[in-house]
Amino acid sequence: MRSFSLFLSCFFLLSASAQDGNLGLDQGNADVKNHLLQVDLLSLAGGASDLRFEAGLNERSSMSIRGVVLEEDSLAASFFALSYRMYPIQALGNAPKGFYIGPRMYRGSIAEMVPDGDEPVGEDEEVEYEWNEVVSGLGFGFETGYQFNTGFGLTVDLGIALNVSQQVIQFSGEGVDEAFTRWPQPSFGLGWRF
Image (cartoon, rainbow, N blue to C red; front, side, top):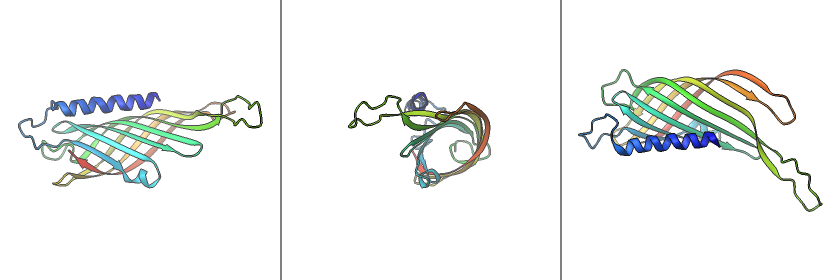
C-alpha cells in the first residue's frame, strides 16, 4: 500500500507541475504538448493494467511514472517505476520525442492469499483470507528506447529497461531468502500527447 501511495504522490506532483506550466518549455507557444499518457500493450496482452504518465521537464528531458497492477485468484502483483529520461539527439524543444536514455527506480511486490489464522468455529463459517507479501524488491535500472509522436497526438514508445534489485522472498511456512536479481523489461506503449 505504501508503494501505491508513493505512486499517487508522484503522479499528483507531476500533474500539478504540468498544470502550472512552469516546466521551462516554450511558454509563449500555447500549442506545446509535453505530457504523455500511455498504456503498455505487452502488459495488457499478459492481463496486467499498465499505465504511464510522462511530463516534459525542459527541452531535452522528462520524468515518467509507471504503475502495473495484476490480480489473479490467489496472487496479486504490483510494480511502480519512476524514470528520468534524457532526449539527447533530437532538435531542442521536442522532449518527450525521439531517442531517450536514462535511469529509473522501482518497487515491485507479489502477494499471495493465505488463511488469516483463525479457525472456523462452526460448520457454516467460512475461512477468512488475507494478503501476505511473498516477494518484494526495491531496485534501480536503466532504460532506453524511441518515442514516436504523430502530428495529431498519438504516441508510440518502443523501449527496453534493465532492472537490478535486491529481493526478499518468503512463502508461507518457509524461511526468508534474499536474492540479487536483474531482468529486462521490454515496453510497447501506445498513448496520447497533450
